[in-house]
Length: 162
Image (cartoon, rainbow, N blue to C red; front, top):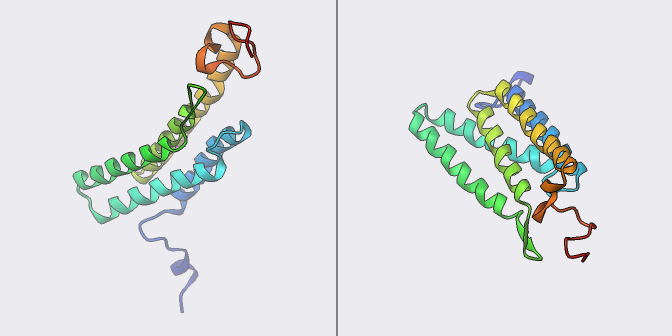
């Protein structure tokens, strides 16, 4: 008969790391979701968790640093394709670049956690949130920062067109 400890044993994975993935993903995801962006809570938690799981597997399969670096490199490449999927062109302007960058940061957080840097991942999450929230406030404070693709919808352009 399996004991509770056997059922809760995750092998190479750690409950604390999964909790760290969930919390970091939740906080970045809630910022994105409340703004109506394509990378919300579920997506954020899944990206961090997925990259953590792949990296933790890579670490558990081989303690050779080069093998782990190959796993890391393949994850980065794969996540680049995921990020490219959220970018699109509309009216000659590219949209979704920040969401693609967020996906890359989310995967980096998962890799950090997979390599044992849980506390540092929390600090990076806070820094990412500071960028996502703080730069928006700065852009809204300075008219010169709201040009081009950063121009708010519904405002008149320099030619008086809407």
